[in-house]
Image (cartoon, rainbow, N blue to C red; front, side, top):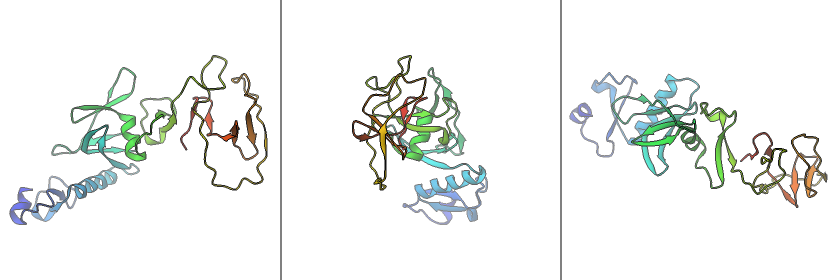
Length: 227
């Protein structure tokens, strides 16, 4: 900034500088340009994506009531910081619950949540994010999914008593179901004792319980996918 401010002048609206050719070691005036904070951030995102083909980056910004405006996260589960002079890849630590933890501005955050929120938005109440393959070390966006939290107040259950359905909610229909056919639901699964009498199945692949259309449930995980 000193070179720019000296030869170009001070721009109070643009207090950041970017390197036109991408080389941060080239501090010649011809390679420097004033930029706003957001312009600088978008420039850094573009540089990272050029250096890492196939990887997409987003700004972390405000997360969990903490300001992390100089941190960028990728869809591959990597977090970079440019709070100092150079871009730094932050190394995660492993917590006792086996989740990867990232330290940003003296605050510790769970990596998979940082990734999900940056790309998908805030996690709504009653929902949580889980790893599709169960591997807590795989924090790629493609391995994360938002699901309804499990409750003990649900049916049916597996033989070992574990929950299979949870907090089923009605889905709004956007299609014409005039020709839909419904029958009492049956299952040949060895995991299910029996389906309640008010469970109905349609030829269009939907389930209805007590008159309400329900979300699709993943029996293996016991979650209802937030689709």
